[in-house]
Image (tube, rainbow over all chains, first blue to last red; front, side, top):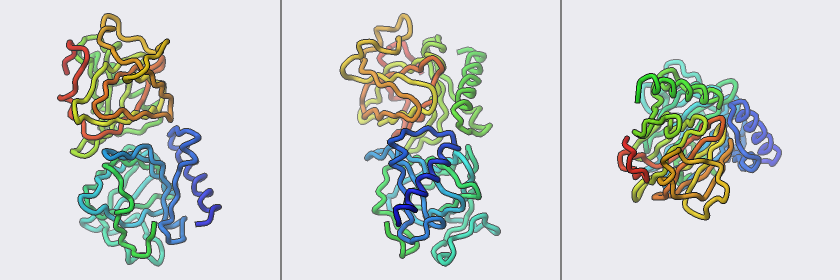
Length: 170
Length: 170
């Protein structure tokens, strides 16, 4: 990813965090991570995150999704982490295994539709949350305005995550 | 605790949550727990909390402290939970073992001073956080305006907590 794209996404994420009324320190603002998952299309497939804590016991972070940005389908291999996503601002469409939505609100990133396989839809607005059990395939996309989502989970071992899209590299 | 005190504290907590810009559902508003730790002096020793999630892996909640309200000294017995306290709004004074503060900002609840034994001071303002390791004695008090504090921790087994003040009952 080019540095200017990284810095653009960081600045956009900061704006959303501010709109969500979440206070972070100047140091934390510089720690916001941006990833395009190696697909080179950050506005479409990407996520911004600020990790508050990640110890051998617990992990908490803010996830920031820009308008219609997608965190692609993945799972955390067994035993895997359990994740609770709590929407703080904006709107997020979360997909997990189960009865597919007949008219899903999200549209997968163009050209990568084949890598989205679970379609049970959970719509999260501010104050709503959903807990993804261990080892469960999931993906999510923000609505028009983007979204800020708190993630509470067991320890994150990002290197072990399994992505449906085999072109993804972290 | 009398029902009117419980409802008063719930309403005060809701006001602080709102001031902190945190969105909760109407259902959650009714789930805010109030405790006076059995000491019958809620304004002085007490805490309000909203548990978002508490599974066998992870726990996340909002803690709300009214003006100068104190969560009394305790620890979570071995292995005990690890807790990260992140101040979202207001100001909180956290005390842990170590070099005692020469001029602590908090004043222990009157008549119970003997039950406060750790005095290393950590001041948390919005955007600041501190992780209390497992099995570490700690207590905290809000500043003038009260405080809203996110707690990220491993599983909470509140029944097992050890309180320095032996008059405390949950």
